[in-house]
Image 1 (cartoon, rainbow, N blue to C red):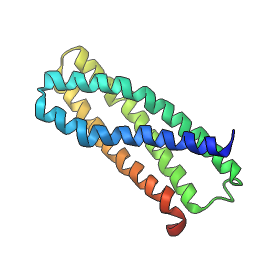
Image 2 (cartoon, rainbow, N blue to C red; image 1 turned 135 degrees about the vertical axis):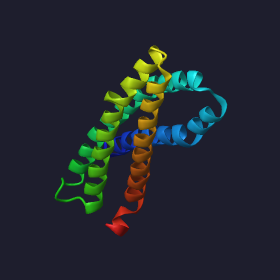
Image 3 (cartoon, rainbow, N blue to C red; image 1 turned 30 degrees about the horizontal axis):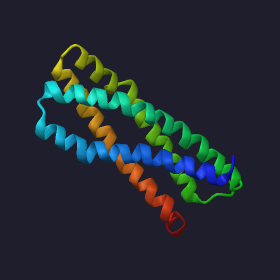
Image 4 (cartoon, one colour; image 1 turned 45 degrees about the horizontal axis):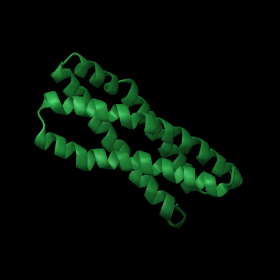
Length: 153
């Protein structure tokens, strides 16, 4: 794989994942809370995540593979700067948080919506909101590190 292709794949993975979280957190969530009752809002979120999460899975795979490839191209873990190690660690933390969201509260959200148990679905969505907020914050920090890391770390 050409290094430029790997960088392109890596950047597209970030754009899809972090950009999607940003949109959901700062635009969709406030609009849904403002305009929809829970019986409408919760199915909207379940349907939104059903469409977004396959893209997140693809992004996670693309980021992991392209990131490891780029580390190898740049000479391996011993040759890359501390900022690259920091991005990798934070990226792995983000992935673990996403896995947590996907396999726990997202499943409860889907089940709650399917059973029209709005209270349990709302509790699951509240958990997802917190975890996505954390992941979004980490993702933005990783972008800063990617751009400015050589200067700081």
